[in-house]
Amino acid sequence: MKNLIVLAAIFAVLSVQSQDRVFTSTYQSNVLNQGQKEIEVWSTLGTNRQDYYRGLNHSLEFEIGLGGKLQTAFYLNYGYSKGITQINGADVINSTNSYSFANEWKLKLSDPVADKLGSAVYLEYNLAPDETELEGKIILDKQVGRFTHAFNLSGELVSEKSFISEGSKLNPISEHEFNLELNYGLSYKINEKWFAGIEMMNANVIAQNALEKSILTAGPVISYTGEGFWINFSLMPQLTDLKAGKRNISDDDGLQARLIFSYAL
Image (cartoon, rainbow, N blue to C red; front, side, top):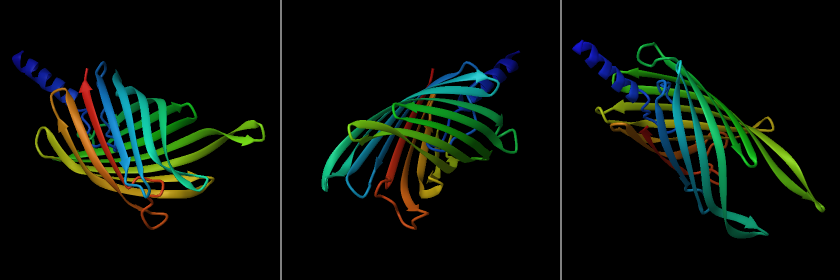
C-alpha cells in the first residue's frame, strides 16, 4: 500500500511538471490534466528598428485541462507601441494602443517520451476591434535524454477592416493576409530546475498572392522550473529577410525579447 502511495505521488508530480514549457515561441505537445489550471503572463518587447521604435505587448492567459488530452485557454491582450511616422513629409513620434481577446484549443495526439514522436494540434482565434485572426498549428516534439526538440508549423489568416475617406463619406475596406510560420527549438536540461537552448523562427507574410517578407530570427532561451511555477526568457535578434536577402528593420523588429511567467492554481 505504501508503495502505491509513493507511486501515485510521483505520478502527480510528473503530471504537474509535464506542462512546463522550455521555449517562448515554440509550443510543445503536453497539455494540462483534467481540472488543472494555470495562469500565464506574457511580456514581449520589440525594438531595434531602423527608426526610433518601441513596442510592448502583454498577454494574460488562463489555461484549464478538460481531460481526454484536451485543454483550452483564454487570453486578454494589450499592446503599446511608439515610433516615428511621416506626416506631410515630417517625422512625427506616434503612439498606438491595441486590445484583443483570444481563445485557444489544444489536443495532444502522442507523447514525446512514451511514443516515437510527440504531437498535438492547436487552434486559436483572436478578436480585436478592427481585426480578426484565425490560427492553426501542428506541434511536434521529442525528448531524448536531456535534450528536448520541438517543431511547429503554423498558418494564420488575418482579416483587417479600415476606412478610407471619399468626399464626405467613410467607406469600409477589408484587407486579408496569410502568415506562415515555422518554429524550431532545442533545449538542454542542465538540472531539475534549469534548461538552456536556442529557438529559431521563420515568419512569412503573404498578401495578394505574393510573398511580402520572410523574416528569420534566432536566439538563446532559458527556462527555470520551480514548485508550481516556471519562468522562460528568450532573446531573438533578426538574422535576415530571406526574400530581400538582407535584414528588414524598416518595419520589423531587429530584436525581440520575451518573458513568460506561469503559476499553477
